[in-house]
Length: 320
Image (cartoon, rainbow, N blue to C red; front, side):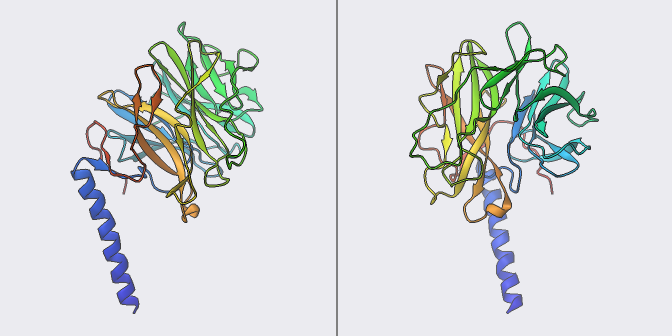
């Protein structure tokens, strides 16, 4: 009996792997792109290379950094944090001039680590002297001044080196006022990520709470001609959202935009798999299209359970 069960499991496992290989050989991929508990992804394209990190909570070493050349197959390359500061929530990985930075919240403070290479070594964590907020998102204005978007819709200026606050927080964004009858955990405007394109500043934020009802979490977009607002919410909001508890992926949120080497855009985000919440929030990806009037959305008819066309880029090898 035991031999029969193990044989069935082996066949099932082989079938899953074989199906994934067949899909990739045919030019497609399946979600998740990173299975397991890898929530709050933040991603950076640097030339032909992509780097990603995510929340690491109580784990040490923390802030695991990944590398890929195709957005699908990822290899671990470094850990950016070796000191316990408290639970590590949603970070932001960026490159400014010739240096890499990861801004992250721990203990209701915002910290930053830096490195000359994503492979490390990473600096000791630096306290930016910003407290009372989570989930920072870095951006620069047209003059090269550096700022962080913060949870709740606030913005704060950084010193030129990006290592500490240079102003008081300024609240300038209220998020999406979604219908009260929607089943959510909380309003919870979190994880603001910045994209600058065609004269617009975009904020991509999470709302609805990360671990409540299946339909709680969502990705919301807003834009402005100024990095400080006034903000106009996208007519395509929510950009990503679980519509029903019967869907395969629950609590979809915490999105980050990235373009590939051919100029196609993607949104990387996290979600729980229905009936497998103990696996944690896994990392998913969907294609993004830009409309003629400079909004972005997931193309109509595209679903996260579909076989989706592979991004451009040299195929890379997945960690074993």
